[in-house]
Length: 636
Image (tube, rainbow, N blue to C red; front, side, top):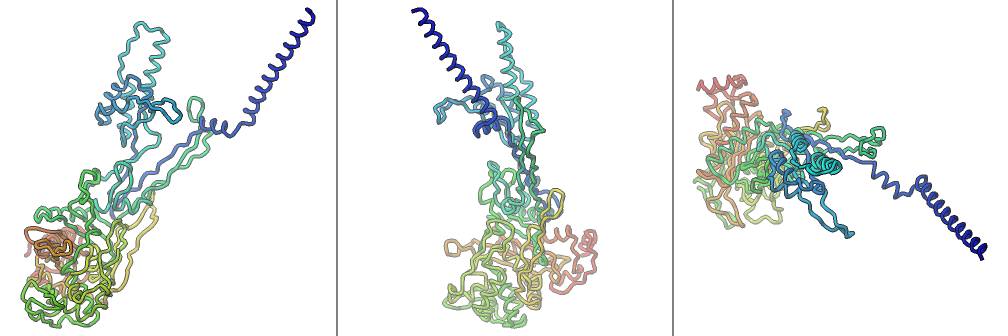
């Protein structure tokens, strides 16, 4: 029996050895396969462990004024984060160290650094490893925070601990000091507005929470300002150090383009200062003002009061954020009379000398009574502008007829957006002829039954100043790259010849009389420049009915009248301490015009003697220097 037993054991040993060899061979083969013919999943895991892609954010472009003064710029900042899983018991100490540096309450930092457990979809208990402590931290502040953490005093007793335990404790402290708090790999950007409120409604701002552009140039030119991201793909060794020789892609970001506006920061400041003073004097709901170069359509200033601080826009009511110059629609009142008079002169249905019966201040037409603010009888067309007669304007409108009046309204740009480079522009309300009532042809020439924006009205007046040629408003002059190479430039664009140069000249002649002692705006008169302009006082309509005691008051004028450099619009919503445009808006026009004429060195067209008789041609004999103008004023 013994030999058979040995033979059986031998066979079993051989079989077991064979199975073991076969198993090791299969395992070795699998290892060889994995090394030589790795699967896609293995490749993916291996690459993920050693290959890293880093995004490179482009710097957002600047917004500048026409003299390259910065209105908005960006700087890179850090997003400071914490890994609560390695903070351990040091959370309160970290919070106490960082609170005065990050300017965040200590209790809030301690709460954020605290470890919170949750169960993921796979049923595994995990902890939060990425929590934002503070956003938009300047680089110098982050460096201070790093130094404070690295030198953070930690009182830990080593009594009774073995060398191995002390080493482990020191390793934990190293991780807490150097790795628990970190900056996000992708830098954020902080938008800064060095002039705070200056041109706030034009510049716009970025949402402080998600950097989304809100209103203004920030929104309308966002694509040009944003730029293009870059990226870097590199590999690291087992200690997470980059192997530069294995860097496969290195694409630099393309910074955003810089937008240069037609605005002049100094002119903008003058306008904002003057309307702020008018705000204190007349306490209206709001005031808007626009300064345009009639020959080019370039906008030198566009302001609304109240305004906002672009560095903290969320601290102001939403109504303060509205750009009244392009989004506030209202009946224009008597400033609209320039349209019907210019049209009447262009169509030759009237001349400036034609005399029109103004019905002693009450005109019955279409079952309604039209009123003047005084009992006028016969007035020439020029005097209709001088006195701002509603009845006279209505009768010119009746001579034109509905179709021609409507066509001129549209030709002057009313009822459509100007497509200025700003968001939220309103187009106003111009009803089609089929919706006109039997009195519309008389009421619209007075500035009723039509809704316009201040921008539309100032561009229409600029067309009169520009020989009847309507220009497109221009707010963005050009766009440049980081090296100041011009990428795009906006050329002045003449939209159409609305009225003939002769009709425009005659209209200007009438508008000069508005600032005479017999006109409605003697307070708009300038000492050294001939002014042409028009007042407006429109009763507000709320809920389809006019409200007693509530008015839009305005004055729009340009100078020098026969060779205009600037056209200025001032509009007040519900002024107090007077409400006629000649009493409220005209003085603001005068102050703005005087200061801008001095700043821009505009050559006068009047001598001091001429200024006593406005409306008469002046002689440009006074040198265009500030000192000469001061001397001329004193000579009076």
